[in-house]
Length: 318
Image (cartoon, rainbow, N blue to C red; front, side, top):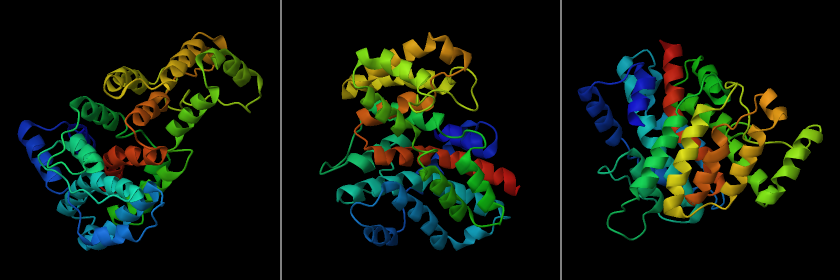
């Protein structure tokens, strides 16, 4: 993921030495200021993790006042490093807060995805060693969600940045846009739909209702404004889902999803309308299998999208 983040921010893949410096800089800026702990503790125990995260991102503006010097290339670099590095820490702490658990510090011996899993899951063990298959799956999901054209949150980042607000304030606005259910909540809607269908044998009746209800029954996770055929990200995620389920056990909703995909892709009604599975169709199944609550889904989306937001912001500034 960090290699892709470099590609987005700088416009080209790094050389070996460039990647080494980039990974070192990100890894050694994963810690957040201790005062952030006190800030987080002010939230109610049942506060939504996404609300806590967007407040944390905005608060970073007060810790790094020089970030407002957006014409300074070094300040822009440091803002990008800090935001990409600290997003997993802020995200993990927002999750731990919702469970009433102590916050876990970053482990700089681990890679980006593994470190995030450590901050989420570590309890009393001296060192947390995440399953490498789950860390790999998370890394792949981060890559697939890193950037995706001029969507709602990206436009928010650019709009706020156009006033020459510092990148932390702009990023807080992007997180806020992603908080909306029509943007960051799509994979949760897929899980809700699959749960409502209930069993594999009820899929044909559901598909019939989609076609005949005049829009009252919606097929979630299909179709995309960008892709007029099968979302290429969905194909990668579908393959990754099987590897995750080897570790977590099979998500029972997967059978319903596969049957729904099979019927929809063989039905002229959907084919003519170019309604193919998109990235959200399978990602929620993976997150659910990895024991993430649905409140965390948009948070998991925000972590990797930060590099895309920063690339878009920087493109506008320069």
